[in-house]
Length: 289
Image (cartoon, rainbow, N blue to C red; front, side):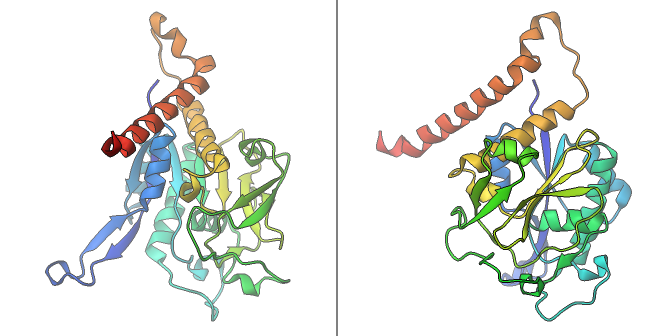
């Protein structure tokens, strides 16, 4: 069974210090996304920002699944609002690229895992809106931008029992997650349903209403940062990888390859993940031997 190719949407940074390369642009993505995909038995590929919609569609054709990564605020222009006082840095070129990625992935039936800003741009792409800052949402709010280690879980979320996320959480209604966002979903786009909320009502996860057409899930927290510390975070990536494999066109199997079919897939992935973790432990402790 071939490992699934997982595309991760990239951002862009500019060289501001090195005079030799001053102003150069670099396509980048936090390595925690790459690491989480690889450790979950996927092949991570970063997707640089493009303007050509046809080229973006070709990017998606190469993939078995798409991860929308975190980053700057979504430009409120795309959901019909003027910028408010607490809006932070925007990156419209990335917004356009990711909206095209999303539309292509839905059209080509490629599973999507949208993380933090990724969930926000997913919502905006299909007509939803955002709170430009959580303080603009009604009510009293807990702290959603934690100070501390990125892997630490700081606040709880309540998960809908009738959701895929609930299965990822090992049937636990309450989970604790990390939190690094100041914007939040406001009006939820048609076709998406809320499946998790924080104690203050802020939306923490959405899923596509008709999951039989194409799998789509968005989470406001960062499971990639918690991957090495959280069973819940690992379960999110593991199930996403499984869904990406399930969604691929059926492979032609030879007679002596029957043992690699569906009933063994879950076990194979578990074994591969354990192999990777064991190898990393050997490497880590090599200096002590």
